[in-house]
Structures are given as C-alpha cells and as structure tokens.
Image (cartoon, rainbow, N blue to C red; front, side, top):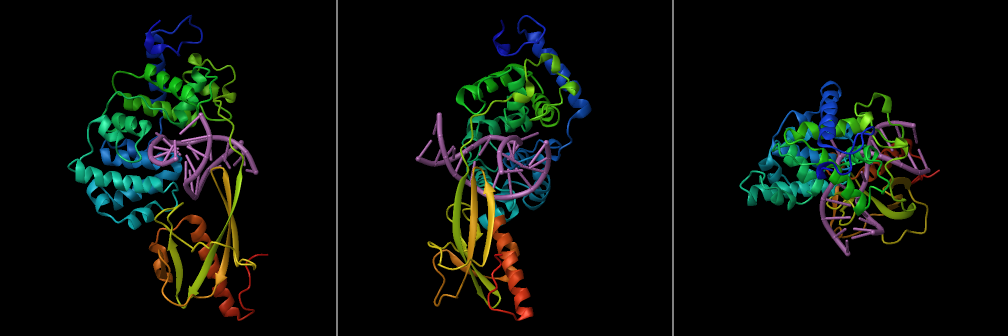
Length: 359
DNA sequence: AATCCGGGGTA
DNA sequence: TACCCAGGATT
C-alpha cells in the first residue's frame, strides 16, 4: 500500500492507491471551479496581504473578517506602513475583531520583517515559523498561498472534512487526532498548485461538509467518504464547564472627560474602565454580562467621585470626543456609551441624582 | 496536555 | 443556550 494514502481509500475499493488520491483531487477541483468562494485575499499572492488575511482568519469566520481585511489593507498597505504604526493605531484598526493578541503579533511580525529581514517576508519556512503568531497552519498557508509551495494545511473546515473522509474516531483536538489529520492532508496534496487544492478543501468544508448537518447529497467526493455517520464527526474532547466571573470597574466623570485605564492583562494595550480591586458596598450604576470561550463575565460598574490629585499609573483622562479613536474592547465601549447616554438624559430631565441603570 | 484568548453568527 | 469559527502561545 502506498504510504502517501495510508488513511485514505475509495469507499468501494479494496485499498488506498495513488489513483484514488488523484481521482479525489480531480473531483474536488472540478467542484471548486464551479462552486469555490470568491474571496479578496485569493486575488493576490502578496506575502503581506496573505499574512494579514491569515492572522485575521485565525479562529474567526470569513464573513466577519471581510470588512476588516479591506480596511486594513487600505490603511496599512505593506509591511513598512504597519511597522511604522503605533500599537494604539493597530489595536484600533483591529477593534471588534477579537483575539487582540493577533493584532499585537501581526504588528511585531511586521517590525521583524522590516528590521531583521530587509522589508521582505523570508522565503524560508523555518524563518516564517519564528514570527510571533505564526504556527504550523499559518506558516503552511503562507507557503501555499503566497509562494506556491506544495504545503498541506489543516484548519477547522479541513479538520471536519478529513475526519469524516477517514472516519476518524480519535478526537481531533488531541495530539493523535491532529497527527492523523495532518498526515491525511499531506497524503492528498498535489505536487503542484496546492493553493487551489487547499482552497477547495476549505470551501468544501465551509459550504458542503458543514458541521451538524452536512450536505452529503451535493458532495462531489461522497464516494470517497468513509464516515458511517458524518453528522457525528468530528469527535471532540468534552468542554470545560462554564466559569462565572464578576468584575468591578469605576465610572469616573469630569466635565467633558472620562477616566480610563490601559489594560495589562486581558485586552492588553486597550483602554478599559478602571478596575476596582474591591466592589463598593452599593448598587452598581451599570451592569452587563458577556461570554467568552468558557467564561461568563459580569461587569459591575460603579459611579465614583472624582479622586483628588493626578490619575493613578496607567490611567488617563480622555475627552469625550477622543473616545472614538481609542482602542477599547466591545463590552467596555458598550457600557461607557450607555452610561454617558443615561447621564445625558438625566441632565436634561433634572431628576434624582444618579439614577441607577439597574432595574 | 491543559488552558487561555473575544466576538459574531447560528441552530 | 450551546456550539462554531482559515489557531497559537504559555504553562
């Protein structure tokens, strides 16, 4: 049996062969030519643009990325312009996309390219892997999409598709499961034009071999699929239980400005309402709740009197007009917007002092 | 190997 | 609500 097709064979055939893989690729490519997605980062092989798209697409859906990508390329068209930007400008352009470490990594990667690689992304795969925020997937995606190398990729769509194709019973979020997926991806890879092959796999996973209810009747490679129950795959390890967190923050207001704090932990480098070490023993002025990963965070925000003296370390007063251009995480931006609007309404109505927003 | 990192979309 | 998404870094 050929090594290249160890985990892959036509359902009807006795064993895997090279021609099975070739037939799979041909059917996949036919489907891709007719049904592949038209995406802006596929219109270029500029390593910078490919790098930007891959960073934005990490753990983020295509539809969410689209508006950010075009605006980013307009604002930071190349490595030099990105490397020259401030961290605050970079985070502001990323605002709302989430996983802000990606923005800081992309910024640092651009600086490394400019200052250590003469302004061009190194052609060497090992050197690309050394850039911050670049792992196995991103390095291979750049190799395939920017440089035309025959490099396999495995991401969410391809994981699901390949797990079904080989009827993988191992959870895909384990070392063994990942190894099986990467080996399968490598065994299917063509010797040339791997970019189109990889794009085709992702599009098939994104539009046909979808989670929950795969559209098997329309699948161009159904006869190769070994899944007994496609909807039951891929298998994943059990998730951790939801963790509840409650955080106290301060709403400090001066005439036409608000006190904010540059975060050092979550949302590092972004501006948030100042954290309170301890919640005051009174009703919060505003409360909201937002989920992330396996957490649910309740924000309790307390109206606080203005402190005499200069603001604490990492804290600054910002005029209301300056807020728009500040990088702020969405939950804090929403909270601040609503509190300011409530104060506005209150000052016109001249009612009781500090009406709480909490019902 | 386990855990962390946000937010938007969807069943 | 729970799950999903063009993953990577840290411990």
